[in-house]
Image (cartoon, rainbow, N blue to C red; front, top):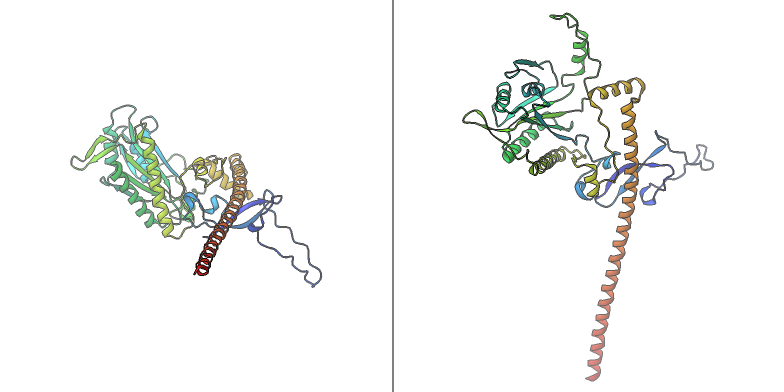
Length: 406
């Protein structure tokens, strides 16, 4: 299998011959002497683009992947490689009903706090589905809140997963529904899944809504939002799961699910959840013909498996406000010159250098292993040929001796 890759090499780097394309000096337009080779166009950071090829299959997780052209992880690691499991308890969640209203983009009333949360103006909620419990979120989550009496009780778990934007909405629904059914079959967890697509109704509707003065029923007009409503590729799903089993007979929540709460079994359950999602989403990406693959492993785990260099640094998280600020600066000046944006750029540059060195070293080791294997096969073949020739010569000598005696 031939894998084409694209990575960064500094101008001072020694380039192996088997990694570089042979280049010929072009003649001058007037047919005279050969013109000197032109210097490659310098990119930011004084680096040049080099396309190489690995003639040995990738090892580990990416053995069957078909990489495209990219700078990170051979172009094979999808940007939607994210799955978080959050705990919703009394300490960090004022009302689980309000959290459900945010995820579903609805208007729900919490019976415990006697307050109404209205998120019906949200336009990024494209799909809401309840799995293994009735689709009545306001009543269901009020029951989930009433079932917990302890002041520090865990109310729910929220699984926040990034979705590949290459998959259509219907495929995303099938993927999420199957994953939620697996959660119920494995751990008895019911769930409510809400898919969010930023700019789902188009940027024109958003701009027009901001231009209309919102003065009806208010003393002061509503200030228009100044960001770009997020990134259209930031498609994700909120899977809100109660911590108790839903009883179909009593139509209430029953026993507590302790598998994920236990100190010993909890981390193992989370690891199984991440692996199951990774397996399912990669299967859909393969069917869709997408070269990239979702990899939920840490940099340390990928390096231990031989799929990444050691020493990679995670980029600092921006958050919605800082991300919007960085996008505005990039539109105004052509680059993200904010403090966090520059920090992320430095981290990416350092990671690119590590990838560059690791790729060159890995390709050199593969070439060395290929040559050693070829030499070993040659020696074994020659030894077998000599052994066969010696055996044939011994048979001839035996036949001659027998003939002479006769």
